[in-house]
Amino acid sequence: MTDTHDLLATIAAADTLDTLEAVRVASLGKAGSITALMKTLGGMAPDARLVEGPRLNALREGVTAAIAARKAELEAAALDARLATERLDMTLPVAGLPQGTIHPISQVFDELAEIFADLGFAVATGPEIEDDWHNFTALNIPESHPARAMHDTFYFPEVEGQERRMLLRTHTSPVQIRTMMTQAPPIRIIAPGRTYRSDSDATHTPMFHQVEGLVIDRGITLGHLKWTLETFIKAFFEVDDVTLRLRPSYFPFTEPSAEVDVGCSWAGGKLSIGGSESWLEVLGAGMVHPRVIAACGLDPEEWQGFAFGCGIDRLAMLKYGITDLRACFDADLRWLKHFGFRALDVPTLSGGIGA
Image 1 (cartoon, rainbow, N blue to C red):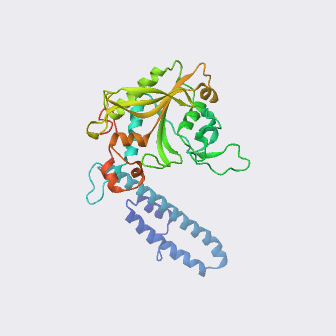
Image 2 (cartoon, one colour):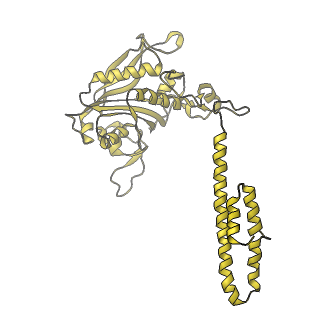
Image 3 (tube, rainbow, N blue to C red):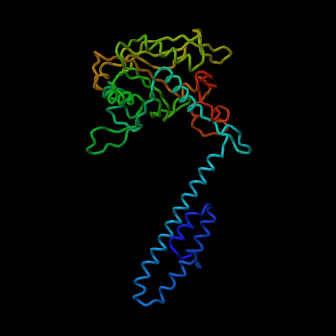
């Protein structure tokens, strides 16, 4: 089997990997026909070797390339046939192996995205390592504000020649700034993500999760904010009887600002959202300060908006009865098994957001 055309035809006609391997061994193996021809080069006269050497090398390289190409074709065809016939039911339980669960904080992330997507909000993200302009200055937080203090903020060492000091973001509000500077209004976003502050106890951790919402449009009022928050609270806690109380407060980036309380009850020592028997603070909100809008290159005379923010960890604690926030970060599988959610369940408004 040394005729080039016959050998290439045999390779092309090979219909299985085993057949192709047999052709390879017969031609290029230790006792193969082409290997035997290559061994004859050593006994040839120099002039004959100059002629036969290039011809035999070309033959060997051509056969090697043809075998590799045919092998790739056969392997691709075998994979296509396998994919066409195999099916894997991911909903079946795996016997003998621990089943995965979703962390409650991850569950709340998904619930928030589902609720606000229904209200026309997109999910926006930004860097966790920020500069002080996006994290503070653009949000109308003056140099003297306590939030800039070292005991609250994780700053990076100053670098000579660096215009802005870097830090771990203390809130997800810089995402609002970046969105307003890169996206033309109208804007409707939520910005969930990790944030960092120097604080640690049963209800605070140095790294925590926060979600903020932002709406920028013409003619936006405090009424739009209140309706949005009521709709969100009803959907998240899955109750229809929701009463909100907005208490005047102060945030540098909103004016007017408000702390938002939700009506609740403590029957039998158990917290239930709904009614107005008692009050529970859940988030902060307000109308976006005109200085913040102007800092992002927009005209506050034309564009108005509202913003709100709350801790995702706190929402998870309230909804699912978690008493100590630190347990969320202990990596205890027993805790996760108790509070976790099935890995393949996706929150939907129609099926029950927390189901």
